[in-house]
Length: 389
Image 1 (cartoon, rainbow, N blue to C red):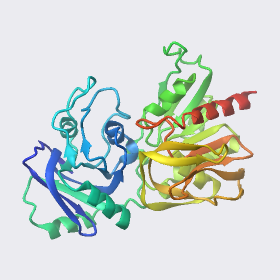
Image 2 (cartoon, one colour):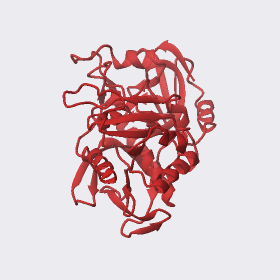
Image 3 (cartoon, helix red, strand yellow):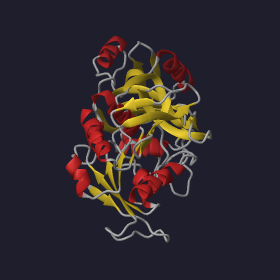
Image 4 (cartoon, rainbow, N blue to C red):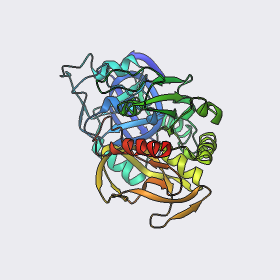
């Protein structure tokens, strides 16, 4: 949907929302057109990790921080092999990046990867609009004549909704690969000699997630979203992990069936973000679309098992519909809500009481973001230690 022409500050651009609201600005990144769900992210830092997070597939991300691009783009902080957002919306792009790790400007990288963006618009007004009306379909157009507002709006309204979208297979790896465990000196441990082995189902996994496990002496076998139960147990895992990912969990029937197969065997299980929604569905709970979602690195969540409040990183537009204040009977034993968002009481974590399985809706690998929730990887390790004992 894009062209490979480099955007410049002189090229006009327009953002068209499906409810008819229009914002006019200048091209940023590639010049062309793109479509997706308009969402906003409240993180003041970490735009590189956000843009390369597969969970943002088919979304046009609005940065609420007024100035973006100050630290440029480096070759170390990507969370996956490419930028996944459909488009990027910023108010005041940095004219010159300044950071010792920077290799090129954000504008250059967006253009290199053919990502159409727009700058110079009132992102505060846009964010308030999305909060009031909810996330919605949108299009960014630049380069050609932009006078036909009605025609552009009609094209936006022809695009598919995020509700019902199955996207995880589009972003997941096609081939299994191994992330080796790391020793105390930070060097990789030979494959097959790690303390624990984990099978990780890639539904849109971020690179920092297996790294956090590797830091704890875990060898991670990352498997495609199409993996079977037999594929999982072929690696003789001590634990199984289900990753974050894009799209509607209600359309993810295969991952749900796969997780149920793991739960039946009683293997320690941990899920993050999309993985939390998959666990909810596997236990028999429903899921629903949030009005505008949680996206950013500053969301307060309470761990109900300890009472502690954590500042956490989020990226989700769907949530699990589970009762907050009661223990539920499921096909795999008793389950309860373990974490809750303090802004709106959305379910942010689940745990089984009779099997070694739990999940959280947010991102404890925190790239970018705070490290308040890093203990969850230790909790997963403890489950595997307990199962082995």
